[in-house]
Image (cartoon, rainbow, N blue to C red; front, side, top):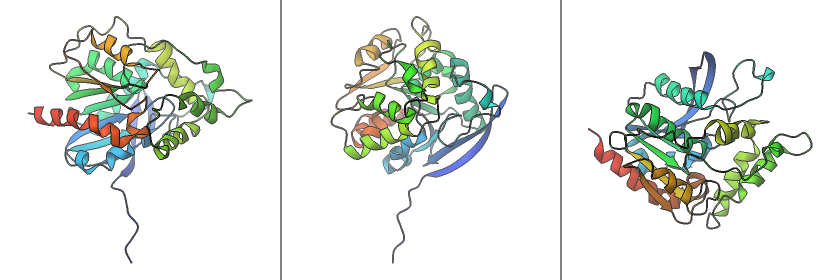
Length: 285
């Protein structure tokens, strides 16, 4: 009798100091080669990238790593969390990404982030581009006008997880398979109290990058921006507008995809991602 199929994903914890706080950060990885660090969306966790880690065409040349931000998924909040409101800031987000890469001793990794992860990729390109081999922003722009009321995301009279899932459900493209659509929604239903709202503080308030992206060298550190045509949070127009201020940025508008390409329709997403990874692979020294 044959055994049960086992996926190649391995999960571990790393003790990472972030802004003088000791954080126990959960991450998963698969593959070998160039490190590819993946940043999940607001209120979600690293499970969004599980399909990439099971794609042998990707993991043959890339060591894919995805971690849960503190407060998310299997990463607990730092000690003393009960005495403060969670708010993700630009400073903390950058420090977290850099600290994770340092803790795992990743040499010039590629970083790919989606939504808030795509926004921080732009800031990484601006302030720390020399540390990375390439940067990939999914659903990334310097700013998006808010279209939601965050007060609904942390109330005692509603189920916070169901409200989070309801909020983002329309951002998934209609062509996305039902299985992957509901996997994406389930992750949002499981977020900690107030975590989605705290992430959106960065997205709505602290992470406004309009007029602040000058000086990005997209030749030294290639910057790829991929946005789904059905994304009405970060619209294709938002991404194209942002790219106009970044000489050399490469933009792709992905057909039949929404705001969560890697989890809502992984088969369709890989059609767009593989050429980008191939270009990165060919350009390595």
